[in-house]
Image (tube, rainbow, N blue to C red; front, side, top):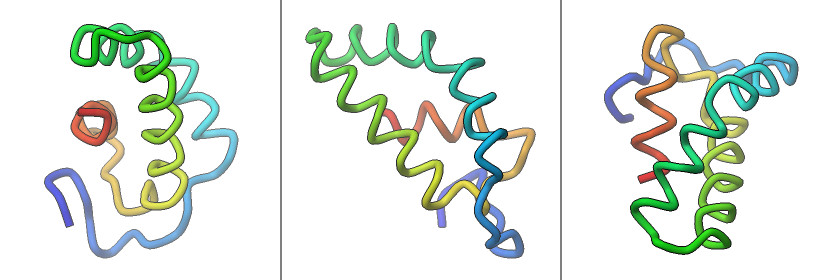
Amino acid sequence: MTVGESPSEEEPLDAALVAALYVEHAEELRRFLIGVLRDAQLAADALQTTFVRLVEKGGRTREEKRKAWLFRVAF
């Protein structure tokens, strides 16, 4: 379990919530990843992997810490 995760919330996130989080944070995450990786295709792959992880483990995240969690996973 990482910081921002809560062991009591094991249910998967609703697909609409994941989509909303993508709309809200994907562009900023993409720019961050391009800065870290210096390659747009690798950044796109890492962004996709980040949101796959959100689908898999997102139910453990705390609502108020999801943005930070996404950036940690992306990094």
